[in-house]
Image (cartoon, rainbow, N blue to C red):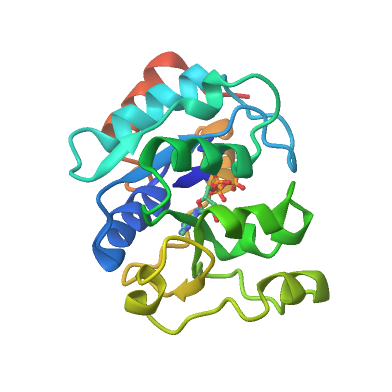
Length: 208
Ligand code: ATP
């Protein structure tokens, strides 16, 4: 599971998903737009638009799927509920991984039921340029004893571990910067897949 606001999806998300798929030997990466992210402001465009952009971005990429289960659910998008639904679907023995960028990881202790996340899945933290910071005490306590050194140790169990990964193509692309550029009418070429850029420009999304 690779969740987020995807407001809009960009190549930092998509390339990370492809490299996670490869590095962890996953069957699939479910990219999952959140409906109402509890810890941030409202997205600039609707969930349906963010999902449409995500589908365009993924195209026919092997191993990546756009998963709309959080958009379809009532109420806030708690990752613990999403992982519970994946666990129910794939069974107790399946190895489930929740991947997130280092910036999102730094706020993990503030999430809804963070301990439950580890009962349901492994966490894989993807290094992101410009997002290094020391861990606050509640986060350090939450992950105590969970960190493993490599993929093999993580995948030996169905859930409960933490792995930090530096993927080959670390990209300093953020949706905030993409939105800013679109608002100002500046180029976003090569920050997004071409089909995503075309859809945004054709429909006038993210204009001031
Ligand atoms: P914003 O700038 O609006 O906060 P964002 O670019 O961080 O957006 P999100 O949709 O909030 O994108 O991120 C979804 C997930 O993808 C998060 O776990 C985030 O850390 C991760 N992520 C976003 N951009 C990158 C990137 N360039 N490289 C690796 N991971 C990323």
